[in-house]
Image (tube, rainbow, N blue to C red):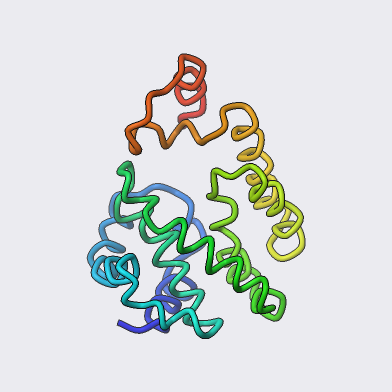
Length: 178
């Protein structure tokens, strides 16, 4: 498994609708093809991928996106978030996102910021998403920020993370289900 395999799958073989819509068959495909690579990434065995922009982005995908497909509804879905956030911040600092010509790649470099439960990180991400990604993704970040301002966390993660939901969070998660 190489970083190029990850990038080719995500940006060439997949369609954008697959990135954001829940489909058990897609989750199973990601698990089958990339489960071992994700485990290696979580264990730090692929940290050398962080040395370059393309391989770094592949590592972010493994830690931030593929974890969510492989362990949807489980605590492990969020296990790569700290590593992915660190990589995203490093990519910003190194200028890798600024020189990336493809908008979807810039967007996925920034997704760990959007997934953070740190209000300041999500607030800081909004103008970055406006500039480097698109208004729709920045709007998602704005909704996430409102959720964090209201609850201090993402209530839809509570069950997976073993957190007790407040009555207000229970109502919110029931109302926000598709």
